[in-house]
Amino acid sequence: MILAFLIGVLTGAIQAGTSVLYGALGETVNERAGIINLGLEGAMLIGASVGFAVTFQTGVPLAGVAAAAGAAALYNMVLAYLVVNRKANQLAAGLSLSFLGVGLSAFIGRPYVGQSIDGLATITIPVLGDLPVVGRILFQHDLLTYAVVPLAVLLWWLLFRTRWGLNLRTVGENKAVAYAAGLRPQRIQYQALFVGGLLVGMGGAQLSLAYTGVWTEGMTAGIGFIAVALVIFAAWNPLRAILGALLFGGALAFQLQLQARGAPVSPFFLDMIPYLLTLGVLLFLRGNRKYSMPDGLRAVFEGMR
Image (cartoon, rainbow, N blue to C red):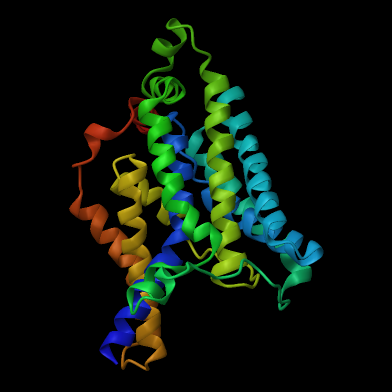
């Protein structure tokens, strides 16, 4: 029984952590360019609803994934226009778009509540998937789950080993310096929000097409905001975000396993465990990540004082 419990928690950590990791990767790109996207929750819901709707209508899950990524990326362009062109307050604009996304996704997904689809299938890796314990934990997942860690590595390489990444980080540190160096900060911030939207949309698609296989209103349940917190935990590094996503996913899987086994603990308290863990980690890190924060983000918060 203990072994089954551990397998359930570890497998669930990967499955539940995948969508939040996609969100954290997208937000890392945004914040490295000097933009805090608190509209992440809404963008992820847009991706989840559009991905489910397209998959339901076409019967092609990959079309749903592409539609989800594209929809979230376009949704991020609204934030780009507001904060880059119109110089709107980033935090206020992001929160407004988050709430708008909740309502818009509910409208898009309303016809599909209670519907079932053939979403992203579980792919068992030959030979490896048949290994005892390890095979079930690591090698029996959907395509987006397999893809997220390679994408994190690719994003790390793009940010820290390419000229595009250097330019993006320069804009995030100081737009005046970037402009003096011949860069176009507005264009780069648009690119960052578009790429970030693609990743967030894929996270939403994984949530509705693989992890749950259904659409329900507000199904992200705060995952978008957790992703923003994980970026701080990861010190704005895509590779470190993997650990943060596994911790959150593990906490979520842990409380689900306890509920499934009828643990004598209030289910309302169990539901709080992943979010309490996130708060605890942020309190533990108190101030320790300041050195990693792009200077452009400091300017955002200092402008609120």
